[in-house]
Image (cartoon, rainbow, N blue to C red):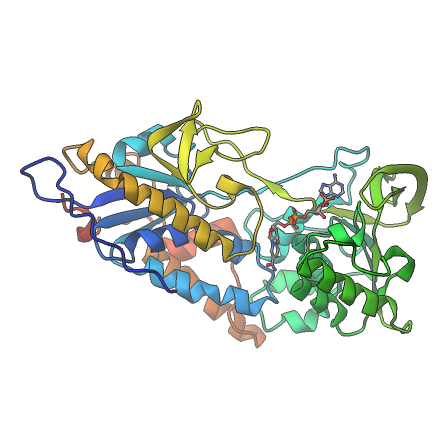
Length: 470
Ligand code: NAP
């Protein structure tokens, strides 16, 4: 991870007193939060960062969102681990801000708080039948195959045909994991149960549904290409759905996507065991079924998504909506409930339109669920640059080090998972694979994660001396 060295703050808390480090809490230990900690601490020990995480383990969407077969992206974890290992950074996982401690308590105990808790709620379609058994969010499927302790078990044994709604990268991940030969996932860290259920899956046909033309698809070309490279999977795409030429003014990314789709449409039909069907200009209007999903009614749309009144039914036994994520509100923190983000200006949280001293935001909860993993790095940098501009004023605002959250957690008897606990989880996961001839295999059960992380029933979690200086 390459970070520019930062200039030391070197600002005395009050005239005549020794300089003290800036104490920052970052809420959320996913990529956005850890990149924020990285930018804050790369220059040395003039900033101390406490990372607070609701789940018992860090890494957020890197662990629980990035698909297991995207091994290169998962490898980013090594760089994130280096940040967590810095003396100026402490991990407090299994601490739910807004529940275990309030946002206000946090603001009292830090010079600055950075909200980086992501956007984990799935968007809904708002059409009839959406709550039928067999209709699920991509979020829950992604969580399940990634071993998230709150992932919901999908019913793959009964669904031969699945509709995946949306043309973004998450929809492609979902389609790929539904179609990929499960044996290819055996070397990854998916749980034994996920592997067993994928092996027993009845899915033969996946229908990707886009409500507009292919030139409006949100996926990236690299991810699109992967779908065409799956073994024993045929792509079914009617060339009539594609424009002959990229539309005028089409971006390079769109032009590349259209070239991939054209090549697929020109392929000879093959007798593959599984099929991926692509439907553009198809708007979902109703999920059908009595006790469970047995079809999806679609309306043909014009290229830009306009209605035509022409409908048809796709016989599918499961519908997975993959139409984006949204952030959720934390008590005591401003929230824009139209855009589902914390309102901000260059990373400064806005309260009633004005920058709130000492409050910052980074990642998806700042800009919405857009961009690839690396986007969070530049996003965090913007926030940290702003925070550093404010640092002299933040330090001057308090004569004393506000002390951080550790004493409050101890006072309330709240046990948290620190870096040692996270290492203990990773070690337990490394041991899980061997009896099955596999490598590192995730622990997905919440209690089992805690047991691995906090084996002692009542440990005294010490405060790191680096963080007790005043
Ligand atoms: P996304 O990129 O915003 O795509 C959402 C898709 O849902 C769009 O095709 C959108 O169509 C469609 N949609 C929205 N509302 C709909 C409705 N009511 N009915 C039918 N379709 C609807 O979201 P995402 O796929 O969840 O991805 C989130 C972010 O994570 C993206 O930035 C993505 O690139 C990133 N990501 C990256 C990777 C990777 O790098 N490998 C993997 C996963 C995710 P319209 O365009 O018509 O609105």
